[in-house]
Length: 144
Image (cartoon, rainbow, N blue to C red; front, side, top):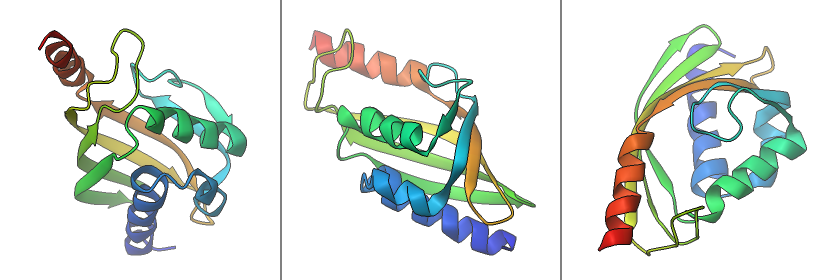
């Protein structure tokens, strides 16, 4: 797949898996193993997941924010690696340890570099996100 096809595939993956919550669509997009190379604060940081583990990660990650949406700001290609910058927003609808659901919108931004194999399947990511901003919003919502 060329870089433009990989960008489109990544946009489709984000929409189906993360925005719509279709974890089972991972069979179409994700390689047999998926490595979270760098994602500090994510409970799967540094782990390699099989497809079942990846699907469970999606379901668990979306449980507190079932209406989450990514607004892709840009994609930049380097061969089979695609960097994506994004904004994210979701309603805090489920409990997070230490933070009961508030029903309020949480926002964050980040950048993620996704790797693809020769068949156009995702093999992992390297990510930086504004987790401090999320924590501050959760604290503010809890307080008031």
